[in-house]
Image 1 (cartoon, rainbow, N blue to C red):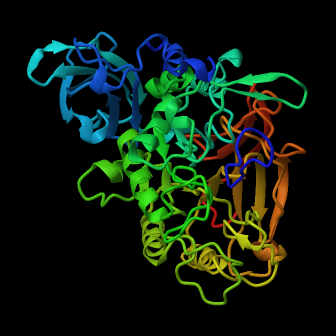
Image 2: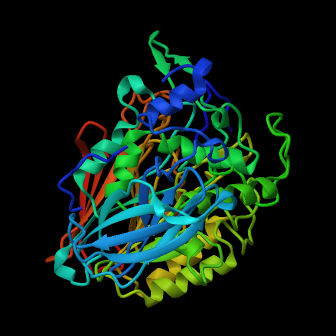
Length: 535
């Protein structure tokens, strides 16, 4: 995925009430972070002042279904997490959910599973942190809300997606209001947000300031953990905490549940299992060691059902069932892939998903009864994403002929979808730091045994913008729309940030995709009809 060729790094509060349907330089690191938290305090738990537990990092929810969801919080010291849910903001007839003890082993984070929720209803919740030795000593409750998935088709579904947050050295800039796209997304009041990977940039250093080509100064909020590439568990944790310093992110998290996947920058740029680094910035050269630390931090700071619920087996790939209209198939194109290479091998059973995940995906797609089946991919299919001079990072390698390398696994999946007559599939991704719509069709392709489908790209959400990638003709993509910068690593002050919107009508079943630019503009819109194998 993109890394800067210019710029700062050579990287390979209370929530405002809404009608929910839902800075400074390095000389004062602690002060800048406290400013971003609105004075909520940044002291590490071990040095926190005595008193009641506090939840200054906000709350968030994840993997919400028609009857369940996860609630996350972080304390400033050891505490018992207690969640109350209610149909009203007054919390009359509240239901109590006893959560875990929060301690140093999880960086004082915790996740509580909510079960038995009513379908299609607005749920108000509040999290209270209690002193584990004296339950009467409690902190100020932190509140949030979310809507459970509908159990009736006519209710419809609307969600947003994007990825790539705090990348290429463009961090929280107080001069422009921080991560502004989050505020815009919150005001659109979606049912949920799909984060398509690169939720952090663990390999992306955040410098205090950057001079832009036109002479303007970009200023970043900075923290010690963002002053170098992440290697230790605490440094990976600090990368997740960094994003939560932004008031827009915390307000968004309290109002909109998320479905989160990971990609490369949660560990480091373009990583794959078994990789040994030659990057002088790293003292730990074994990527598997780094990935294990990163995965632990990801699980601590992200409410993902397969990481927190019994039987989840610690995996990221999963299906989130959002009522009769929608199943979201969250893919993991990072953990099981083979090494990056010229990607032209004639036999490849590992590919980018791994054999076990591919078999799982086939089973789940075949069993799905949802009208629409979104394949949430952390990398694109037909866009050529290089890794150095000769290797490739994604699926395509620029050879427009018959499938080779990782393309073989995608060809097998597309053939399966066609022959099993699985309807309503579409692919959503981010990764490449621009927005586009690609239509894939067998009549344009070297490989023809598949049904037509769409792939939509949207991002970054808070990172550098990059020019459009080349297309690989193996699966016959046609770029129907693209909006991308002319040069690499444009700051968010120079290029708008992008996110996408999916709106499924409960009556017709029609699915509308809108590619949006920060500032409220819809750049492209496409309506897809239900019940078709290909579009």
